[in-house]
Structure formats: structure tokens, C-alpha cells
Length: 285
Image (cartoon, rainbow, N blue to C red; front, side, top):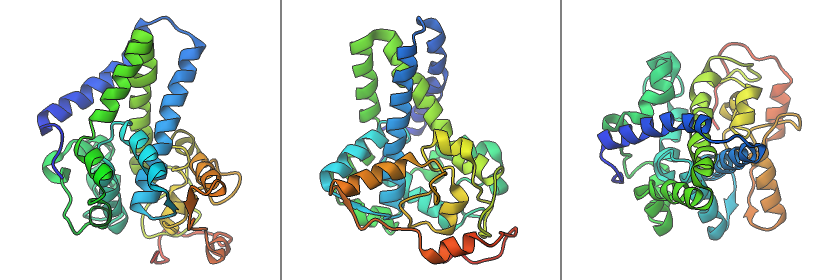
């Protein structure tokens, strides 16, 4: 699982893209460009949450190879490295949640490291062992292995295509700004959702539900729900919990593109009716 760029260059590119968000102030404003931001942010966010998170990491459903490639491409275009790297490290988060070994716990390593530092710390987090379940099960799929190795290609193609079609305004609003907002929407699940929000379930970690992060991270903000039952295809356990990733999975199921969709068991809903205490009930799922 070698990386596309040397660590120092990867860090420089990351901060260059972060700084590039200010380009929106140097192009003429139009509401159509705000719509372009929304499409770029939320579509790629669903690629991350649907493919990288709920499919590769948690096997919450099955989908066709073609659909998997499309969503994996969109997720990789979010510029958060490759699907095997992303999903494999996420499993480590659940395995050691808010304990030593968690790659991004604010309780263990502080806010900055949990939010950004771990992502840039290639010396510690650049590779995953072959025994990691995500690498073991998907590392031999040619197109997924290629995306993981050459994870910089999809965002570069997206950025170039936007610039060629719409010039600097489309590049600024369609790539630079949404890539930054999406990065921090994802990183906020690691930090904000382990510090601020409500706890429906008494999990053995600090996970919390937060409707603000759920909005920008297309349903991932119902993090306490997710830590209580990781295999569910939906993180918003109730209809009023905004989870557009779940809506897409449900639509794919209706079209025959997804199957074996894992539901939230009745016993989990029954548990939700009881008030959660700080820590206590084991989380075997």
C-alpha cells in the first residue's frame, strides 16, 4: 500500500488546498456557484460515507461492482486518501475508541492531532498491515487497489475538469472550497462528535450525536448511534435524524443495486428508550 506522494509533498499539498479556499473571494459571486459548492461537497461526502465508511469498513450492505466503483471514485475525489487506507484506519478507531491505539481521539491525543495531525502523520499512519480486514478483503480488487495507490488522480482530474469547463470560478467553488469544507466535516466526526452532543446510548467511548455535523457529513453526525451498532446501514436511527447517505442506500436497494442491507435491531431501539449513563454497557457489535 504505497502512497502516491512522499510525505513532505503530501503535507504541502494538503495545506495548499486548505489555503486555496480563499480563492472564492477573488472571483465574481453567483448563487449558481453556491449550488456548485453544494453538489461537490455533498456528492463526494456521500461517496465517502456510503462507500468508504458503511460499505468498506462496516459491510453494512452489499452492492454491485459497478456501483461500488462509482461511489469509490467519488469518495476518492474528496482528497482524503484512498478507500483501503481510510476504511482500514476507521476500523482501528472503533477497535480502540477513545483509548490508546485510537488514531484520532481528542481524549488521547488532543484536539489538533485528532482533527488534522493524525491524517498528516504519515510516519505512523501511512500504511496498514495485510491482516487489516479491509486490506485483506478488498486489497486484491484491482480497481480498488488502484484507487488506493493512486488516490491523487481522481481529485486532480476533478480539479482540472472544473477549471477547463468554468475557469477559476468553477475551480474555486467546485473544488477548492468544497474540498476544504468536506475535509473538516469529516474530521469533525473524530473531534466534535467525541466532545459535544447528546448520548442516547451508554457506549464505552465518548461518542455523541450532533445534528450540525450530521448535516455537513451527510448523516455521520449520529455518531453515538453508530458506535452502539456499527453494522447498521443507517446512522440516523429515526426518521427525524437527517441521514441522506441512508436515503441513497435505500434507493439503491429499491433499484436492485444494493442488497443485504443491515437494519437496526429491535433490541437496539428498545435500549434507546432507556436513558444512557456516562459509560457502561459493552458494545460487542
